Each structure stands twice: as C-alpha cells, then as structure tokens.
Length: 261
Picture 1 (spheres, one colour):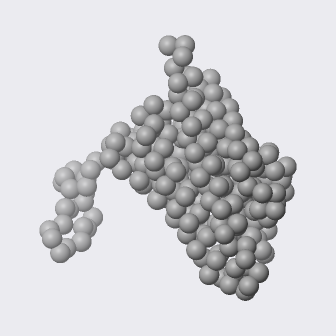
Picture 2 (cartoon, one colour; picture 1 turned 90 degrees about the vertical axis):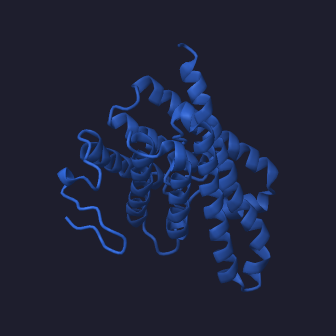
Picture 3 (cartoon, rainbow, N blue to C red; picture 1 turned 120 degrees about the horizontal axis):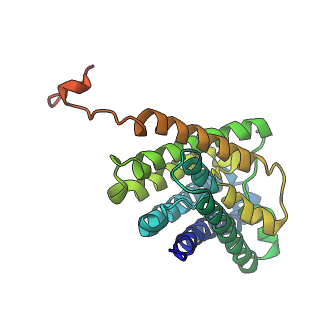
C-alpha cells in the first residue's frame, strides 16, 4: 500500500519527537532548576538528582512510545536501530530511508520547540540538551562508550522485538526503556549517552553545536551493527532449543538448585 511507509514513518516521527522533547527537555529543566545549586556549591547533589531524572525521562519516553506504536513501525525511533535492522535484511532500503528522515525530522522539530520554551541562558548552559563529552573523556573514549551503550540497547531490541521467540507484546517497551535508563545513568556524565544519532542531531542542528558530533553518529552505528549481526547470526538464523528439554543439553533445575550443562 502506497501510504504504508507514510503511516509507519509518522509513527517513527512521533517516537523520535517524544524522545528528544522529553529527554533534551529534562536536561534543560534540570539545568534551570539546579543552576542556583551549582552556584551555591551543592553541585554533587544537584548532579545526582538531575542524572536520575534525565535517565528516567529518556527511558520512560521510549518505554511509552514502543508500547504505543511498536506494532505499527517496530518502535525504532533511532537511526542506529534502523541501521541494525537494515544490515540484517529485516527492513527494506526504501523504508530505511523513510525511517531515517522521520527520526531526524522528529528530533529536530522537538529541539525547535524546546528552543522556544527555554530562555537563552538555559539553552546555552545546557546546549539545548545536546550530548557532550564529560571532563577528561577523550573523543575516542566517548566513541567506544557509545559503541558499548548502543550495543546493549540494540541487543535488547533484537532479543525482545525482532526475535519471534521474544516477548515483544508483553515487555519489549519496558525492557528497552529500562536499558536506556541504565545506559544514561552510567554514561550520561561521560558522553551524554545518546545512543541515537537523531537524539544528538536535533539539538545540535538547532543550537549550532557540532563539537565532536561524529562520536554520536559513528559510535551508535558501530554498536548497532555489532549487536544486530551478532544476535542475528547466533540466535535468529538458527533457533536454539529452549532451556529444559534433554535435547538442549541443559537440565532443568529443581527449586533451590542451579541449572547445569
């Protein structure tokens, strides 16, 4: 159907918009709320509270949107995830381009709205929520961190959403959202933990902030390809037997025991 790419693309637009609006918006909100705390020397407490809130904002945005429209578009909202599906031949090239355009456009529109909502001082202090390397983190370290964090994300996406034996209808949104929350808590102070080129692109475009921009494009791309190809080759091309049956070589444990091979 001609309109099917448009329907799916719009779902991706809404999801990417939501992620940037909630995620980058949380960065700016906490920047505004805790600006005085930083000036008064309570930066450690403010940073801790801000990090937790920002992580939850990103994770909840994805959990909600994947649960809401995952059945329509697959709930990528991330060019790196779409790339993983493309290299494993799980999405057509034409639809891949539609998704990428929709994701980048959604993030950019969200960033435009955020730039209107927040005063210039807050926008400049928080760089409109664009990811940035932490103090003492080199661009190569940031590149590897983004690879690892994105690997976790795409691995979970494939295990819950792409795997026919996975649990897409029941926990995919929750699992993916919690993975992002976990990644942001760990990597937020180091790289911003974007794991998503569109999440970086929107604020960077509107704020004209392109310092080390390639870290948040190349890192997620490499991490996504590694995770997608690894999961596809190991578990999707040849389905493993479930744990338990004698044919699997794994003995199902009785209560209180551990499984053995």
